[in-house]
Every structure is written in C-alpha cells, then in structure tokens.
Length: 310
Image 1 (tube, rainbow, N blue to C red):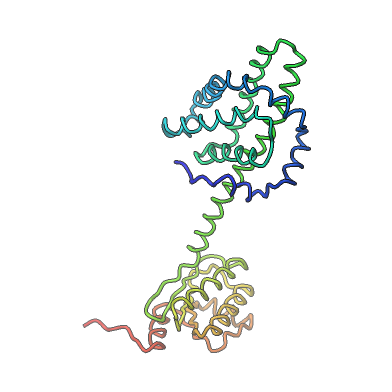
Image 2 (cartoon, helix red, strand yellow):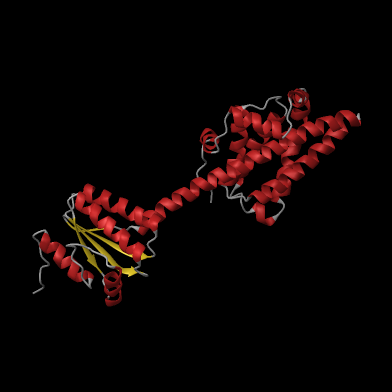
C-alpha cells in the first residue's frame, strides 16, 4: 500500500534545506566544482549505460523477497524505474544545486511512499556503485582517470544517500504528525448529548500535555456549539493526584470564562477522599458519582428533562 507523496519542495522546506545547508553539506562530502565538471563531461557514458544500470539495480531489489514485496504492481515498477533513469542521468549533469536536491528528495520519497525501508534502499546503493565501478573501469582504460571519476561519483552518490534518508525521515515525521493529530482527537471524544449539553469522558492518564489538549478541545467545542453545560466524566481516569486535580480545576475555570457550567461525574469514594485530602476546591461545580445523574442535571440546567417511558 503506497502513501501520499509529499512534494519535493515541501520535503526540502521540512528539512530546512537552503543554500547555506547545501554549501555546508557539499563541503562535508568534499564535492568540489572540479568533481562536478568531471562528471558533467560524461553525458555520453550515462546515456550509453542508463538502461543497463537501472535494470541491474532493480534486478537486485526484485530478486529478494522482502524488497520485492514493496512493488505492488508493474505500474509501480515502471514509475520507480523512470525516476531512477532520471536520477542516473542527473549524476552526470555537472550540477549540485537546490533543484538537484529536490530531484533527489523526490526519488527518496518515491521509495518511502511504497513502504520500502532505508536498509533495502541503502543496500541497493552499494550495488549501484559496484555496477558503475565495473563500467567505468571497462570504458576508461586509464586506471588513474577511472579512479578519479569513481571518486567524484562516490562523493555525489553518498551526498544523494544522505538526501534519501532525509526524505524518509521527513515523510515519516509527516505521517507521525497525522497519526498524533488523530490520536489527540480520539483522546478527547466530545459528544453532543443535546442542544447546549456536551459530554467528555476522560479515560486513562491525564498528564500536562494531554490536559492542555483537553482544555483546548473543550473550549473550542463549547464555543462552536454555543453549549451551556459540559459534563466531565472521570470514571475512566486511572488515578487522581494533585496534578490531575489542578488540571481539572484549570479546565473548569476556563469553561466559566466562556459562559459554560461544568459538571464533574464519575466521582468514586476513593477519588472523593483524595480530592478532600489534597484540599482541592472545585467551587460550585456539581460533583456526582454516576454519569446518568450528571446527564439528568445537565438537562435540568438547560430546561430539559429525560422523558419517562410509558
């Protein structure tokens, strides 16, 4: 299953890759203008071997069960091969600028999008260099010339590997961000019980970060729904200590500022005792043992009631 492909400019922006980063990284990989000029003279070599190199590259990937499983169909294989042909030709374009970086990020993102882990891609890069080594020393009989070309090529390919890893990391951070947003939404499942009445059942631990998320979600929904009452049910909270109590007090105080009444339900005898020992002052907030009682009170506060069945 493929993921949505983050555009290369967005990837470059996410990893904060600008002219300064380009210069810094080129210096670190010792990519000099002489290296680019040397590779830029090898356009005919690239065109001559492009198809063979790409086919050999994917022969390795497709020849092993694990990486082969990342290529869902022939269309996917054709797409990544096309990208790889473009990649190979650009190795000998004699440039290493921001557009080059975006092209490299696009290749890395394409492989991340199909779910291929970096270990398989890096292993294939090793094979890539081996193929190029053999072809260089075959086409250039002067060992010194072939070695100089290979050294320049090695610098640029290793530079590209670093960009591929950047693309993987950026794309994964994007995915993790979406998952975290979804989890935050799931962790504050606010339900509308009736016009003007909302319910938030709190489940699990309530640390500082989640407490802030709860407060933000509560205030947003209160304003959106023009709600007058919010039931906070803490029956599912694992433990109530001083920090949890403080978060509850802050949330309730913020609710008052937007004109909403809080009702606290799920108060067990143990929790009641803990709150008392901590000296927590909930003010005029109704506190009830059972959610059903809280719902009845909330409806009463808004001038409604639960109809009794005949």
